Image (cartoon, rainbow, N blue to C red; front, side, top):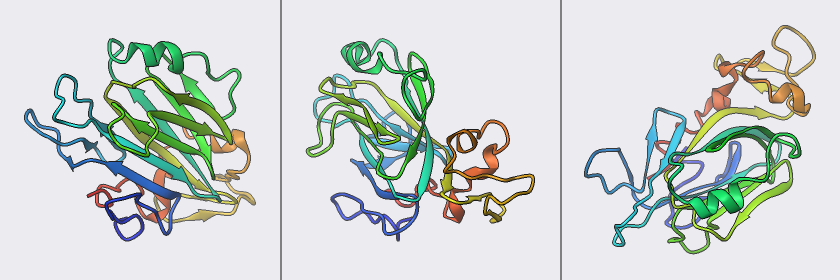
Amino acid sequence: MDNYCPDIGADEVCSAGPFTQFTIRGTGGIETEHSDARWYFQGLNTLVLKDYDNEPSKKSGAVEIDIRNGYQVKLQIELTNSNHGKDFKEDHWGGWGTNDTDGVLSKGELTTTVLMKGGDKLSIDIDDKWGGTTKFYLKVQGNSIVSSDELVNDQVKITLLGVWAEGGATDNGGNTDDGTGGDNTDDSTEGDTATDSQDGLGMGTIALLGIAVVGAVILLR
């Protein structure tokens, strides 16, 4: 992935894969008691953006993820502390959910799971410290759900749950299904089928199309 989305000190534009941009702001590292990392990976597929409260010399984390046309991507976004960022949670996190919003598969007090398509975007700048990155912006299935003018002010976890190429799915074994039949048939252009990663698709389709997408551990600094 560092070949696809190289760290060039600006927007990290991707030449291939399910993202056109995967930019993480700040220094990455590992989570330790005295770590200055703005972000780190928890396992292979969860990106953690750190919130530095009461430490003005440190910038909190930020990320921009843009989905490439021809792909659908399932993400879980988790805010980790109900006591932090209350203005954002009250004014912008509430008010939308699974009943009235296409592509929102689940929605809770701190966690949502969304199915994104080409042209969709997630942008988070926890404490508004990085120019050009929106505090919180989420576009799902072509609809701009959230565009926040409030600070998120909370640690955020983003977990990649699945990636599908339109017209066929790729599993961890590298087998591509063209959606024409068989036990594992998946046509990810059909919303019901593509979203069902907890049933028929399962974690096998996370495959990230053979490039271990957010095994982007290497991609990111």
